[in-house]
Amino acid sequence: MRVVRVLGVLEPGGAQLSALLLSAALRRHGVATTLLAGDATPPGLALAGRYGFAAEAFRVSERVNPRSLQWTPEPRFADWLGPRLAPADLVHAHMVGAWWAAARALPRGVPLVASEHNQMSWPGGDHTAQAREAARRVDLLFAHGPAASAWAAGLGLGGRLREGRSPVEGLSARPWPQLAWPRLTFTGRFRADKAPDVLVEALALLDVPPPAYLVGDGPMHQALARLVRARGLQAVVRLPGWSYKPSRYVSGASVHVVPSRQESWSQSAVVALGLGVPVVGTAVDGLARTLGNGRGVLVPPDDPPALAAALSAVLGGEFPDPRPGRAYARQFTPSAVAALYLDAYRHLLASRARLRHPATAATPAASSPAATNTPTRAHHRNGHPRDACLRRPGDQRRHSRGRPGDPLAAPLRNHAMGGTRVPRRGGCGYRRSREVMACVR
Image (cartoon, rainbow, N blue to C red; front, side, top):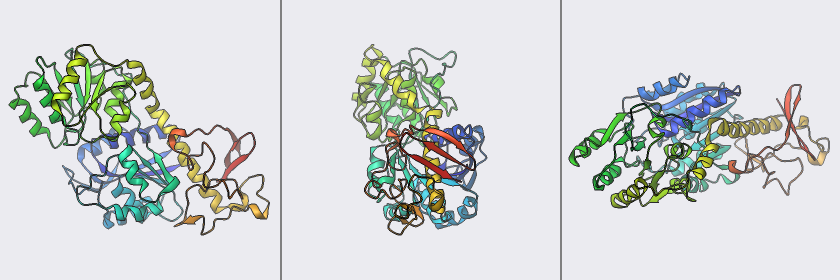
């Protein structure tokens, strides 16, 4: 399978890291991935190279502009993508600027998968209208977090909207030698939405703050260093910079902090939970779900006194049972997440194959004229199957709901194939107890 993965922005960050981890895990299943980016930084290209991907970018600069192709529809980017998407069996585009361009450039008949990893902040202006038009060409959209899901639900995707999953690594990491203990950790981008400044203000309120490792980099780096000096925390706060293995700072820490103002889904929180480290985070968007059900400690956003009080309690020995957090984190290993996306990709390609060759679809009723699976205008738009086209031919009453376990008709969190793979010459199939579903390549 040839997948072209398109990122609106390629820089060291959570969404980019999850896309690279997913691509690397899919490679072990025989999926060949070509990586393209709209905007990229040299460190972003280097990050891709560490995972074995020679990324090609439309624009490269030292710092990503706020009006980047993460958020902005750009016709020139779509034109640039056109010839580069031609070899793809399937395209997976991450961030609205990327999937808008892919929808415009992609050849008819090639499945398009989209992902949104963040709340829609629109730093360069709201482009929801353009996104709604492009969504007509999207076969599946994976949204990460409640806010992104709510926005995507308004695009008219219907049953093509799914819950996004991001892989994490480092769940068995060992700490770097000679780290201080007790210690506090933060890992992530130094940006306003991640709120490392709120953590520094909270540390200044503690009577005896522990050594704090703020691991990362970003546009707030210099301002954060000035704030550390202004609060007299030079002996407490350590800024080691960006790390390719942040989990080795987190492993064995006394507490990990996620003080975000916005957070659809926090990889650093999940890694800390998987390592058995207590997590204190803000009750915002998807982070509230990640740390809910007693897995972590939640505080209001932008509230240094509340954060300081929670840190003091955890450092004093009051923290959640680590077992639920460890169990939660295990579902986000690269292999587990890759299996889910791979099944979704295969179902999309199988449905396309049946649309191209309706007469050869191997189903019990395939020979019946009334059961013909020929695509019609009522069932398809812009060349892609509408909400639940993967159905038993002729089952008009049930096709809007689809079958349980079908990634084209059920969210990823409910996804389970539940069948037996039957090798066959020239194609693939799944045999179930009362029906046969097959794809012909």
